[in-house]
Length: 326
Image (cartoon, rainbow, N blue to C red; front, side):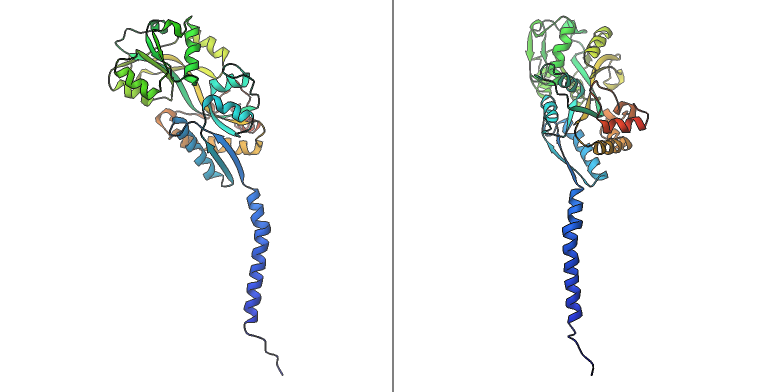
């Protein structure tokens, strides 16, 4: 006599096996995958700012190329981003090179050295602009004596740099008729309404601020003297000399100026492998950065590996050395 089992038994066994295998996957496979995810905190600029837009481009590129990398972005400011990375309240940050060097060295406005910050890559150069009307009669920095000047809000990198430049010419805010600390947008309105004679700021190439002003009247950018630039760049390697071509803003001639780099910094303790991979992705996809704006269209791998006076992160340095950039 043949034994006949329950016809539903094989199906029941199958379901039990599937549940068992799924449990094993969740317990081991799922956990292993979660462990592979690296989450880094990044301090950015203010919402809607140029910094914020650059950071969005960078983080989206990195997340696309490294699915296991999560970057949590939070608002920040140039000066506050430095100690945030040093203390590892943030793993990464966007900064301006002139500020980063002062922070690393513990120079004003910083109260102590921030020696745990490391250079990763340069992203966009930011010339320093001193803008006046072309028919104002103001042609040099010393011509600003007795004039009304907007220098951006107190404590901004641009404002601190304006003081450094005036000091290089033996001047201070006391030599001005009036010093304003308005935002660039408000300063443009003040310029157009005749309430100030000039404005100073750091911004990218092909700055929308200058195009806004020049749409009303012809503008002039004040040049800096080569010997003054040489001293300031020796004092702070986060600054460099740049020639702003006349064609950029439809000017009469090229203008010698200072510039700082918008760059990515990291805490020295962030994994070398992670920073190496980030650096590799950013340089191998430089076209994404070049297409970001007209101001970054001439970005080169050599520029991205620029020495700004603070130590490179070991992960970034390893990649740069492999490519002969350092």
